[in-house]
Image (cartoon, rainbow, N blue to C red; front, side, top):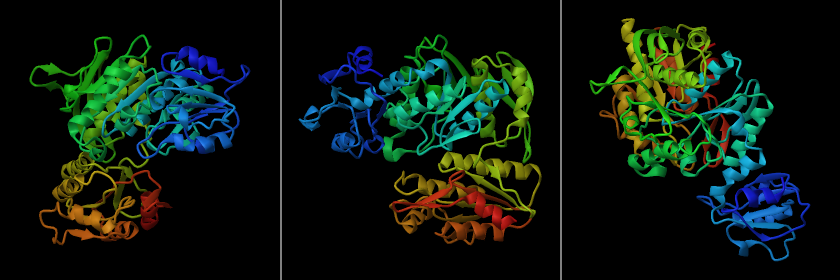
Length: 503
């Protein structure tokens, strides 16, 4: 890419400071000096914990041909390359990425979901429906980035905007027609998805999480609101949809600009007068799946979902709405839903040679833990089972401490035996995290509560304690195959440990 493309397309945001030979060709872009190669443009961004301007010498040493900076004085006087200036390099990075990779989102039907819970399940369901319609789909989210059998590792749910644009380019080159991406509040606040031209935006729910970053629920909500008033509203796509869970109290507050078509989903009538565009009536639920009636603007039908839990009905509803916005046929959705293979680490049943039901789930927020436990209890009661619910959980270190006692209260409400253990303690003392959780129990000395900091031992204890009719929930890490202790990441898989114990 010629530098003139940037100065022409982004003439109000990027200014040429130091010209270089006209034949210069930028061969790559990055804001990570460690990734710079010969011919790259290095973008010096000011982050939350560090300033990219400190790494300009490193970028130059690695072959940076051009620099985009906010502080020109940080560039060495003898630097022979091109110097560009912006008042906010972080804000302009998404547009640079989109230009460099030839605006890949223009070639895709782009679906983004924001909300505290359900984002990963939604993207996997969307992928399933569109793939069934022969519209190849790329997914960016918590578990990984993938299209078909091609997989890229995911270090964070919504990556840096340049990485997003590169991945969209990869998707297009692999013949993708659709994008399903998880959009976190951090990503919205840090403008990581600015370079995506969205067709559909979904709001799933808002429950307590990330208050170490956002401070209050109101601030957390305002960031989510911007996804619709800014990202969707400013999209260049001709027809834009906002799909909102109006059963969620925060969803009912979402303001949708007039240039966007709004669809709501939920369980029938709201406030005795408003009815959702997509609604459901539950007919039957057991550990094999869920039968429910779906009402949509395109017709009504009975659906068979392999997923369990009321919260998963909401995930299915929102994904069906997104699929219909993308032109899919409702009959195709009805036919393909029973074949959905599930999501790694989302109420994932562990294969067993024993008569014990063991599930792995990513639930790491109060709302998510309650959703999973209440669903298990509801099905257990439906079968009039005398079996117990055993729950293993912990809380991550260096994260919102206020949710720790709340999760204890929820576990105590639903589970018959609770084993509190470590999650990803990071820089915190695991014992202190467990003590913070322990303060939430009404009776912390109860025989039904066991404190075991070693997660492997906690999982082993839960499965050894379980009787044939009992149900074990191992919550918090789900698909993750690591544990972070201090600054080190160790290989650790809840599923693999449980599978070995049940063989």
